[in-house]
Length: 244
Image (tube, rainbow, N blue to C red; front, side):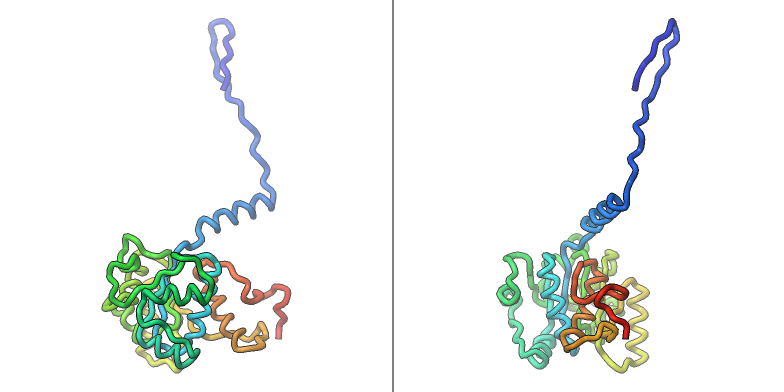
């Protein structure tokens, strides 16, 4: 800003700096910065007793490798299913789960925190300290029904209830088939409350060569919805994704 005095007249002049012309590169850099700022820092992952445990364990692996802090919850039924489907013995005590998976996936201390079904002092039990997002994978119809009814009798249900009331992303991954009218009504109810229903239904347009390819398809869609980058499979229209 400059002042100019001529005789008894004083005038104020404002000098404007020309605006910078933004290129496509500038736009992408700014977009990436925004995406990085919005990237989830903490995600609650709950494993329940539905079939489909490979989806949940693979999701846990991908989240940890992406550097996300994970709050892990699992039910007693999930322990049975993990043993039946994957020959995987989940620790009976939550305090041992962090060490178990930390060794399995090479996770640094503190990145994975596990909580028991009645650890009410866990961060996820309160709206004052919720995770950025929550995924229940696999999700039983009983768990979905409890969430739809607003129940919070254990930490999994309470964490989901908190996610909804705090408007955080909640992704439910059911695998049940066929679905009864009760199942469908409960899904509609939680969807109206803000949850995302993401059934464990893999696609085949990416030409999967193994069961792992089918698992990765579902896990990739979950990661997309919670904002975690991945390279589990080529996206539609990208190189390597040949149409069948």
